[in-house]
Image (cartoon, rainbow, N blue to C red; front, side, top):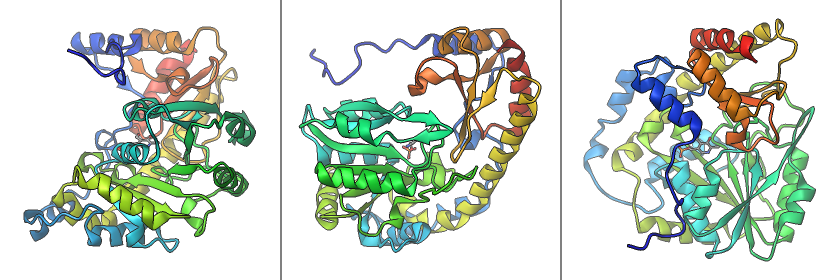
Length: 385
Ligand SMILES: Cc1ncc(COP(=O)(O)O)c(C=O)c1O
């Protein structure tokens, strides 16, 4: 049987995943400092209210709208504010599905999208599965992270169709500045590119950057088409409910929405129950967001306290999001270091290389880990760094 060349050649786990599977099979308890699934982090969910939201009469009717139920879009528009209108929104089953729809909309096989590096490692595959190439363009760190507009401009080829940015970025926490936004939208307009802005973590600002762009929606009339992605996974800490969305602004927005609705109509993948529940779930979401922000602040403070006793180690500033980057002397490659820590201390951290951090010397920790586990994990791994 022929298999599409869009897929990987093999499905071998990397050394770290293989070691993790082996330890768990041996019954060893692993202290996971990479956990990004909020349902596993000891947060207090308003369970009765969530169950009630998922049991409304709307759950039993099917009246599909390819753009998504209007009441859900009204609630999402309200959540974002900045004058966003329900007709500028299209619902998806996840942010990842949103990327899939956008890559189908924007490119033909062999076309390219530019993605920031370091960043969320799924872009390469989300693009490849739609027949596109994701070309990484390095951002750089100097006191804070910066988008390299010059490098982006040079990376544009006749096949480039879009630029993807994550605001704030995962795992660097970098929020775009107003100046970066202006430069980026001008570049996209000049080179006839769409701009995809992933704002799944925008509700989680942490340390103060100067001139933060809190949301791309602050710009009501961008000079290029802007597609903003978000979803309940992070906004309401409910990844299991599978609801994401795309907001469209800029030239041709309503045309692009019509085309996206055509694409979504082929699947109609968003379930009626989650659409019916969305307005209530968004009302409940601040309860979770508050706990997550508090957890991230507590863990950052604990990390800073422990770092005082380890002058060889530092951390990068965290403008926003759920992760922190730890810097260490690169005595061994990051992946080897993560494997060494896992085997010696049964504590799991991610090597920077998983997110394309340049060179060695970066480890990635989740800030939503339960506070006592986070602290325990740090005291296990720091003596070995
Ligand atoms: C930057 C970014 N975008 C999108 C997603 C995926 O969100 P969803 O669960 O809505 O597909 C993640 C998940 O961690 C992410 O880090």
